[in-house]
Amino acid sequence: MPATARDLLAMKNSAVVYTCAPETTVAEACRVLRERRVGCLVVARGGAVEGIFTDRDVVVGVVAAGLDPARTTVADVMARDVEVAPLDLPVGDVESTLRRRRARHLPVVGERGLLGLVSLGDVARYYALVERAGRGLPPVVAAAPH
Image (cartoon, rainbow, N blue to C red; front, side, top):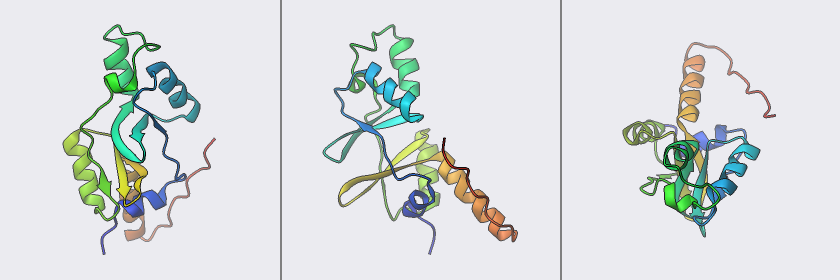
């Protein structure tokens, strides 16, 4: 049985998904990005994914456009056409989706809504573990987060 999005989520150091509401100001969202040391927030309402807000949205959609982050909402600049992955989506399809969409993050959803977020880095980490195992090497243990 091939590895899936569920397996990618299980490999992560944390099951926490940072979210915000669409009406959150960019300034507030940026504080969360900084405090949580993450590059994106899933924009959700009631467990339903409405978009993704990334550090790149701040640079391109706010700073370069000359907008005021205290008055601009996440909904004004977020990516809205976000694909989501079901838990049983094979890792290869997760990777294909990320590459096709030129995205770094993919929300994972189940019957109860948003369950997690996988990244291109998670996919690369998975393939590195598979390669090490295939060569008979022990897995590399990740350092504890700061």
